[in-house]
Length: 255
Image (cartoon, rainbow, N blue to C red; front, side, top):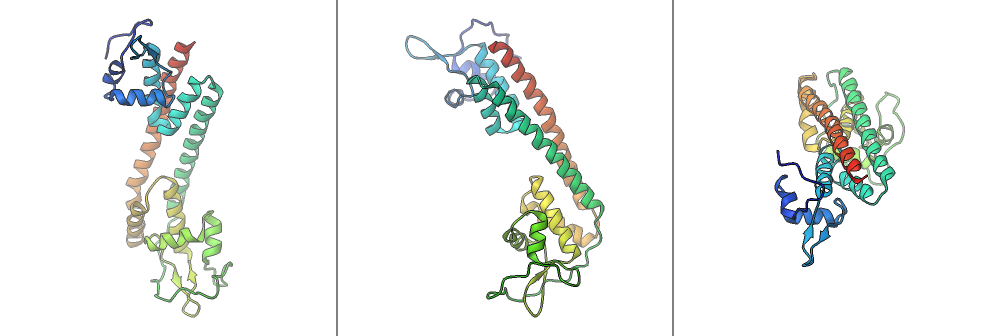
């Protein structure tokens, strides 16, 4: 812990930087970005900072883990420009996103609870239809085509094709038309891929998880990922509390 700063004390960029493992250039960049209030200047033009700047820096660095760098910077700029209500709105948006992410996690866990061993047939090498677009209805057998499935998930058909290339879904092809046909297992895999993408996972992270679920017919491969996801959400929530405390201290110091 560093010594307690007195309100009238003047600080150099290095004084602010040293305690946080930052460079003096980073301090100047933060000031230029509006994250810190404008610095004072000596008669020779050197920047001087105060304990108010030190608290602003602590608030910003505490906000980053919970809100992300961009939002944390926007919050600090709003406060420094006197637009405190805008700062609170940005904070509310982050909390709403965290709540939505928790709901997504719960949806994934619910989806996994309904998983059945896959029964999808192996995809064929039938060519893509070129002159006729793929159908936009559910087949009489209950299988789903690309349009209805994309609409149900709220994504574009091109996204499903991308997921297919990445190995996330394996729709079969109708031997006569070459249309993609998604059966119940394919729909399940697409839904899981969609939920995990919303949870921040990359395609290359999702593909082996779904492949293992298909091969094992069980949920064990996803348990560790869900536990990690849950832990990251909890860490984000705690970080938001820490950031809020430091921001409140900064608001009090600003008066």
